[in-house]
Image 1 (tube, rainbow, N blue to C red):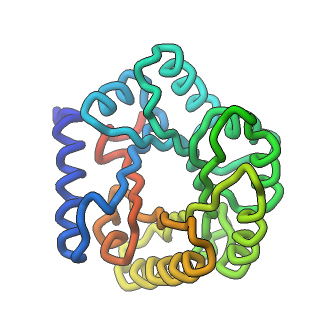
Image 2: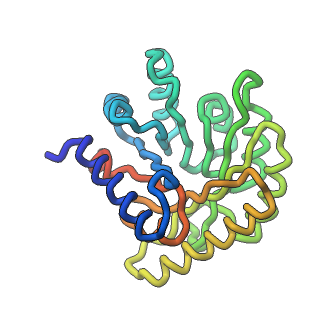
Image 3: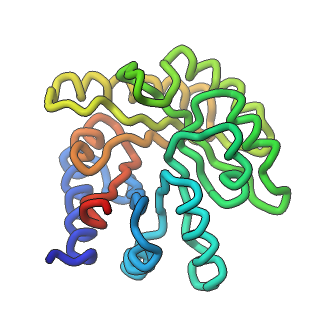
Length: 231
C-alpha cells in the first residue's frame, strides 16, 4: 500500500512539474489537502509532513476535527478552508471555526458569515464559487452574478474577498475543460484588477490539477491523491 508520505510527495512533484511547464515557481501554487471523510489521525499525519492548508466539505465532521486539534494545542497553524455547499442556517459554526470559506454563492450566506464572525477572530477570507459549467447539480454563481456578488462581499467589514473557486465539469473533453478554466482565469484577472486583495484562483483537483495550473490556477484542491480513496 502506498503511504500518505509517498502520495503527498507525488502530488507535490506533479505541482512542481506543472508549475515549471507553465513558467511558474511551485511556491506560487498553494496545495489544499482535502481531508473530508478522513479521520483526524490522517490530518495529523499529513500535517507532520509539512502540510498546513486543509479543506473540508462536511460541517459537523469538520468542526469535530478542528475542535479536537485545537484542544491538542499543537496544530494552531493549520489553515482550515470550508469548500462545501453552505446552508444559510449552518453559517454560524462555519464563521466560528474556519479561516477561509471558498463556497460563497449568494449574498445571504455572505452576510450571515459576516455578522456571525466572532470579534476576537481575524477577518474571514472568502472566495466566490462559480458554476462555470451551469450544471443544475452544482452550487455556484454564474459570471455576471459573481461580479455583482464580489461588489457586495467586498463591502462586508468582517470578510476579505480573496478570489474565486470552481469545480469544472467532469468530462474527458480536454478542450471543454480548457475553455472553462480559461473563462475562470479571465474572470479572476478582471476581479483582481478591481479589488487589490484578490489573489486566489482555486481550481483544479486530483484529476485535472496540471491542466488547471497551466490555465492560471494558484490553488489546487487535492484529496484522493493524498489520502487515498474516500471511505
